[in-house]
Image 1 (cartoon, rainbow, N blue to C red):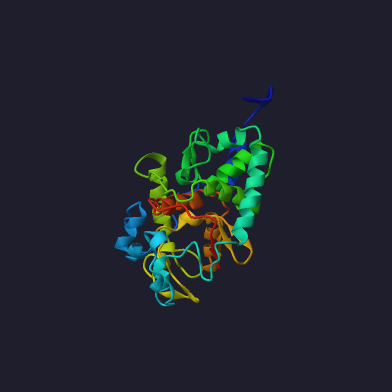
Image 2 (cartoon, one colour):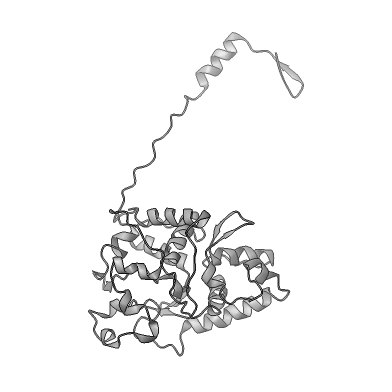
Length: 302
């Protein structure tokens, strides 16, 4: 006899037989879905100079202050300058990124009026200086790797403000914070621990084909660099992260993970939400490929 909530239940042979008939069959272990990879699955030096193995354009863009302007005037050669932060025609004096900076400053100062917002973001005694160069990072409280925009969303919620990852206001704050690291090199340590694990997952994901076109990120940005794609010339992923969030001339302030979404849509792949673990792994991977390259904001792209 079995009691449930104090009431006796008597099980007869017919009852047990009936239950056996209606029980669903045991689920067999489903095989892992087949995922085609872009081969070879490359190994990468986690530094901007690692591009020497691939497009070998690093020699042209390694020093943004001394670019070879002869390449700039040649439409077949200017892609070698890796102009991810100033698509021509470019006017550094004024563009939408500057207005985003103003918005980010206003929001940041309001949220940090008591100092807790900066503390939540991990700003130390040096304040915001260099903070951008250390993201993504492992968050001991959350026990996972997070990007700067995800952390802004979390810290904003603590202050009672909705700052959804990917929104204009979130990206504006991220851009404002990045401005304090302008000219400083990225420095993401992926040699050990959770960041190394995220880097390896991101590397595999970068080579995983998906979507209607069956493309991987590496299909274009590793194995077809320098070739034309719908009027654009494909450039290297090295040194790519340092100019985000970027102002797009289609009137959008675009974070790196919003760019992932756009690439997914362009290739017929279901995009993920900003802050998704897979996107964060990709961000870690690409951030490491920008190590040693200086943060450059505000930037503008077409």
